[in-house]
Length: 124
Ligand code: HEC
Image (cartoon, rainbow, N blue to C red; front, side):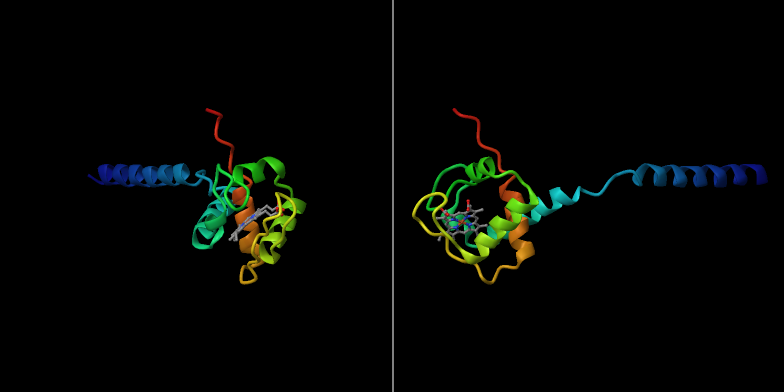
């Protein structure tokens, strides 16, 4: 009887350890992917989509075109985040982008990171 109890204990212990070993390697989402997700949510909450569409020119340029134009380097992300906060014109035409002074730099950067992941739709 004792032996059986011991066996049960050992196998329970082994299976707990086994389960643990299986769950640990499941990595958290990469920081970049997380920023992109937050950026998408932030965009949806803000007024961006009033003037921007993902795949079509609207009042502002389509985000897939912005993603084609800029590589996601730190310099570009900082520059574009700054432009979203301060507003600006002259890159895509004469239409100005409204400033967003209430937006934090980190939020603006998260939005830019998301925008720069928008891929152009395959041409139909
Ligand atoms: C009032 C309309 C309007 C709103 C609202 C708006 N944009 Fe824009 N956006 C524009 C226009 C117009 C341009 C093109 C500016 C230019 O030619 O320099 C632009 C350009 C951009 C660019 C590219 C800038 C460049 O220099 O290439 C990014 C990135 C961008 N917008 C992101 C955003 C985000 C993020 C938001 C929301 C926080 C937002 N926009 C809200 C009109 C708007």
